[in-house]
Length: 201
Image 1 (cartoon, rainbow, N blue to C red):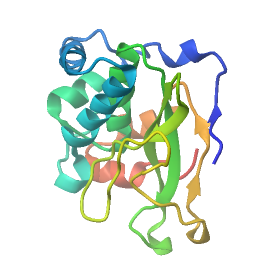
Image 2 (image 1 turned 45 degrees about the horizontal axis):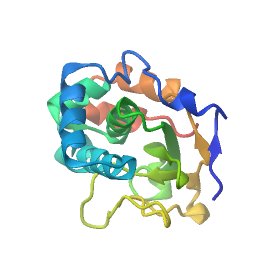
Image 3 (image 1 turned 90 degrees about the vertical axis):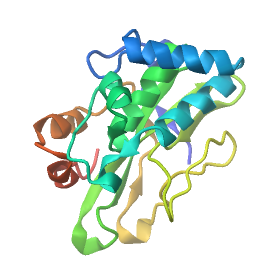
Image 4 (image 1 turned 60 degrees about the vertical axis):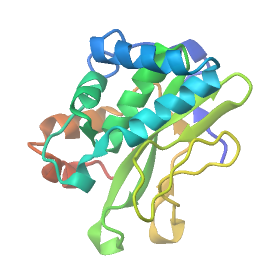
């Protein structure tokens, strides 16, 4: 699939988007400094940032933690969040290291069956000069889910089954979708958010 950046100006994918995507906050800066101490190239930094969001942040639907985190700083401090929240954190870490990052979405079955309905799933696109744009999914691995950092062949969390009505959107958005942020803000807990997630972009 050919990815479609919302903006042709790569600098648009480097900015802060307060209050959701900020990288001059204490915890984000501390994590960026930790990553920078362990990596030299932008590719290495991007991979470590991805692994931070994928592995160090628990997925609220997996843990059944009721907390809803939205802002990158809160996600990192609480070590908790759903796919959208993890994508917000990864974007903040990457942009804070001068690595362009955008927001991507997929339409997936909510509970694996058509009867359960559909919901958006959030992930990221990353830009490296030697690779161009590629997608990564910091959702978090579990049995049946094995997402990896790969610049050649995508290895995302969910294979899209178009025959079941799922959809892989090629868009690379500069900012998280307003409908996603609204759903997160208006949900009392993660259980409510599970059903309030938008169904499509």
